[in-house]
Image (cartoon, rainbow, N blue to C red; front, top):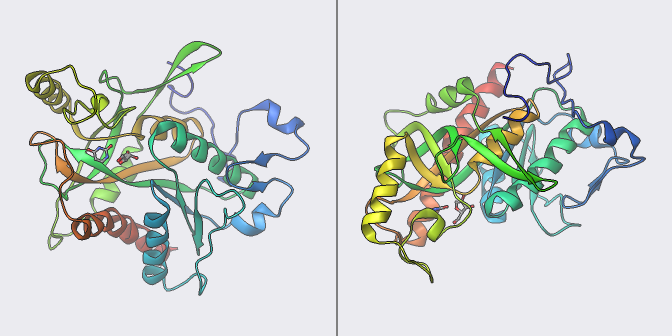
Amino acid sequence: YDSCSTKGCVKTAPDGTLLLRNPHLSSLQTDVLYHLGFDSSQDLPGMFGDVKFVCMGGTKQRMRDFAEHMRQVLQTGPNQLVNLTKRSHRYAMYKVGPVLAVSHGIGIPSMSILLQEVLKLLHYARAPRPLVVRIGTSGGLGLPPGAVVVSSWGANASGERVYELPILGVVRKFPSLFDTRVSQELVSMAREEDPFPTTLGGTMAADDFYRGQARLDGPFCDHSEQDKMAYLQQLRHQGVRNIEMEATAFAALTREAGVRAADVCVTFLDRLLGDQVTASKETLTAWQKRPMIIVGRYISQYCKQN
Ligand code: R2B
Ligand code: URA
């Protein structure tokens, strides 16, 4: 495997700030973070040097809701939430105290562009020891809809725990494991009185919502119901508990940067029972808050202790 498959290599500076092991960056006069609408000539340490948590999720609205949630939990932040990436329009970013909430769109290409620019932003801002958390949605495997899964690893569609990326025409593989300690700490934020279960589990990241997730309801399909069930059962036997579209790249890129990360997703349906997302908009909105609740408790506890 590529990069960082060995433990113990020095990945962060002694003060906990991100080291990026790209020698070419130092020859740039200014580095333009094109999709975020920032560049390194700005006072990034002044703007983002205090960031401790970066929370990412698919939609702009959900990340605005999360910023609002954190404003209430932490009793801090601006009176008016402002989208900091306004100049770029691709994504949305809000800052509430030590929390940066950013949207990443759907799928690995969209998420990984955002994540890589966020990693450079954290580097230039000299933010010490940040934690990056994805709060997402997914399809569950044998879990009640509305359950929350904290990912222990990401697997690709072949069940390999790697993020595959062709670089200069050669397909490279990067291990897609999450920080065990952070994931367990997040699961421990669940409370008995929560109206939903929170579990640790493997997460399969697909490059498609329909056929790529074994669905039968896309515009194209040449596999049978039996083929679908055999595949989903096989994934479940391998320890996969939910399917989404980013986990592998998210785990691998944060790991390569030496940044702790976690993927916390609610499940919108049980894929062993169906393909269509049929819950009402109100129900889905309520379910989407669940990863925010778990992550909010974690951040709140950290802020009280520090
Ligand atoms: C979950 O939901 C989205 C697709 O509907 C995708 O971003 C994901 O991982
Ligand atoms: N997101 C996915 O990628 N798959 C689902 O089934 C639901 C949400």
